[in-house]
Amino acid sequence: MDFWCWTDYAIKGLEIKHLPADQFLLRFNHIINHNRALAGCPWSFENNILILNGIGADENPMQVDLDWCNSFVQIHELQLILLNLSVATFIGNRIGKFRDMAWTIGVVMGSLTMH
Image 1 (cartoon, rainbow, N blue to C red):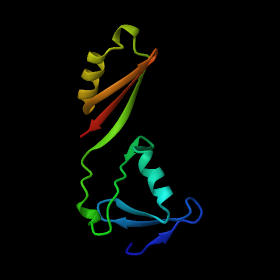
Image 2 (tube, rainbow, N blue to C red):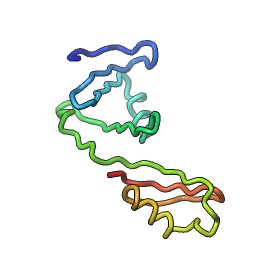
Image 3 (cartoon, rainbow, N blue to C red):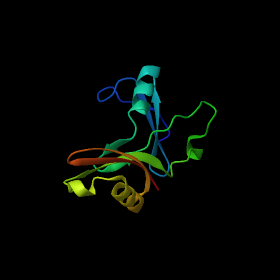
């Protein structure tokens, strides 16, 4: 598709263009919506990460690096003795690149850079 289409029903004020290699270019018509979408990253849908990256007017969307993305992983029902940084680092580095963690009783949450 080489045209811009309006999505008036699902999201107002958003233009979507399908690019090669299953990429999409989203153009927000208001800066508030643009900032809200980028601030909420990463987004996921049906266990797939949706990577959003802001580009300037003079940048080529096909040149944007989409090889990595920060993401959160939640691990449930982990024994209390395993709620520590070394276990979180081990698990995080097995599925990506470990960044940091936050935990409460019953939940370990780590921020990972996925490669």
